[in-house]
Length: 179
Image (cartoon, rainbow, N blue to C red; front, side):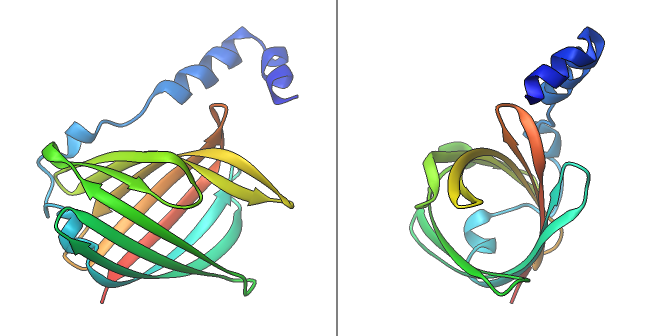
């Protein structure tokens, strides 16, 4: 249906949407930004996060808090996330990260399809992954284009665009605070 609507809108509109989907920021542009992000150092210990999910129109659909308990043994890390949503529901996601050469990382979690891949440069971390998301009693696979920016030794901002078949569904915005 959405595809038919897009095609019915005309070639100029379709081209604009498709070009917009292809334009992304580059991790390299953050190479000289400070403070330098060391993922193993920042995601170590306990962190609190506060976030929202907004739909395509920018309307807040969900509000949530997260308590993260993070630890590393060598190049392997565990990020145990405990979500509490404004409606009182809870969720847990346990990320298992692996540091690779050149500032690259991989990650796995039970609700992640396959493997997340990403890298750090300067004050930033960018990674992408597919998540099994429960929606109206069923599970759908959605793509995440996830960016994190270290603001200080205790504060990090996170913005992730969620899409399906290249169509932007909404965004997740988070602020992390290291205890």
